[in-house]
Image (cartoon, rainbow, N blue to C red; front, side, top):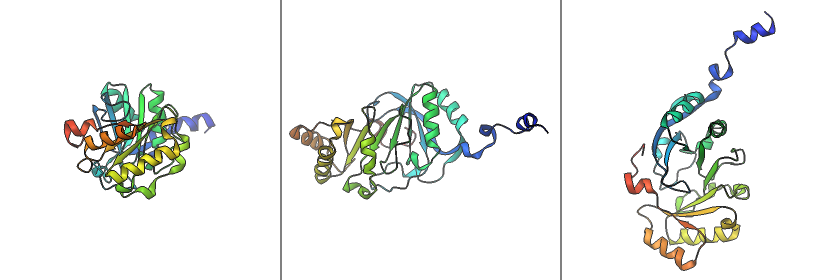
Length: 231
């Protein structure tokens, strides 16, 4: 068999290779609840698995299980949603290495793409067209030790950093991190109250009193749907 015939006899890598699959917990359309795209109809691609165990986590159902999807099928499902905003989230999406390729393909398809990531894994290989929403874990999260501080110098004006605050002590810790790393000069900085742990009004008052150069945010999806999966 000549080389051309041999090549024709082998299906394309996309058609046959399990290397193009990702484990997905759910794909759904809702309103983006936070960050710069808050309020926009968005299709969420929630990948399965996370190496962290934040004490306030609201998506523990994504730690295990899930279904293997081919990348082509994910793209087709996103296209059926009929919206231009796509958020790849988890779990921790970067725990699946093939997430990097999915993000690039979504950008190639013309979507406005964001990535929600814990900040514990390297974000340097993420396509620069993606808006990276990077958590910084506070002491109150119980996962402060997982912060990958090397990510911070990589952030640009297209990206955002997010602090979920569990107490006044968390607020003061986060305030110093913002100042030490001049985060407000690098990208948008978002402060959110952890539900049932910090009063939204108290956090707003602290930010105003300190004239802190950060954006207060509440998670819109929690206000509307109270952590209901798929919303």
